[in-house]
Length: 122
Image (cartoon, rainbow, N blue to C red; front, side):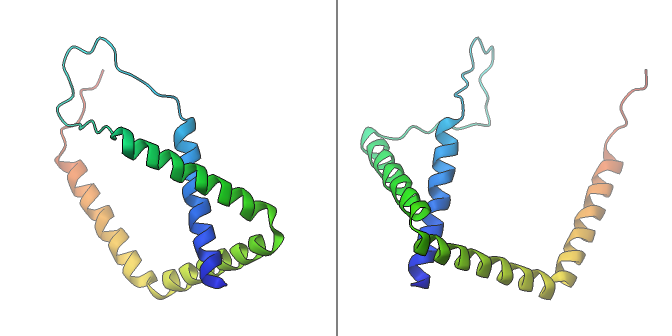
């Protein structure tokens, strides 16, 4: 039952991400003088797009079923709380390593900022 609940939570997260992505407005670049040289445009084939749409619909239906079934919702919440507890334990156990990594990153940022030329004053 726990594995099923975990699967449901994962699928619900994917459904939410998919729904959020599909609701974002599409922006297009018009009248661009020079094309961006550091970007790649990927376009899904019609078959892949159809499969992705079907997957999104299935995930959304499953997420709605999870939301409407109290037993599944309870199981999903138990799994999610287990994830939070595990994450807290990992952070507590690895706090020294995390602190050292953050200190090193801060030192590298400071060193990089010192190498940058200062902006002209007005």
